[in-house]
Length: 197
Image 1 (cartoon, rainbow, N blue to C red):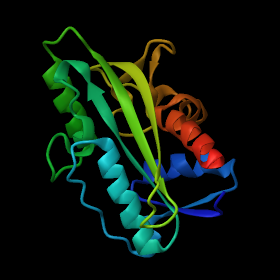
Image 2: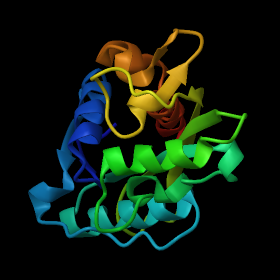
Image 3: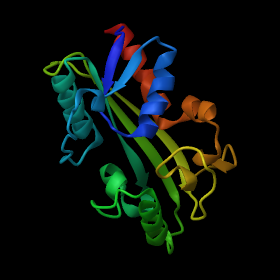
């Protein structure tokens, strides 16, 4: 395994979650901002292409192995939207969780199907030109709830209702979320693939 990995993100919520998940493996996760890494463009239409671009970008700037996560929420009645545009669904300039959530709620107002799912694609590169990146995916299914509930988590979590738990993702404790989320599922797959490599 690797003692230090750079996380190709400046998202404080993701950094906190990944640091907690990797601590058990005795791996230190460093934010790309520690290496003055500029934001990587995400021009692609798939999670995997965006994650790969971000991982290579962070590794190139840091000289370390890099982990990138491209994740988002997909709503079935909206044809899979917001998808890769989850962070900026309500517009590029805002990147506002409240605006994004309001837009999904508005677009689902007249839809009977409220099913949705979180997707997390993780890409790990040993170095910037790694010819065999390790790729893992996690999917977490739920229902869209128009009324926000809960103060934990970030992004769409207050509206992501989990029937099995009778609460939203934002009402779970960090420990609960880190055990069952799309990110946790993708990470389990990633760890097993790294160990097998």
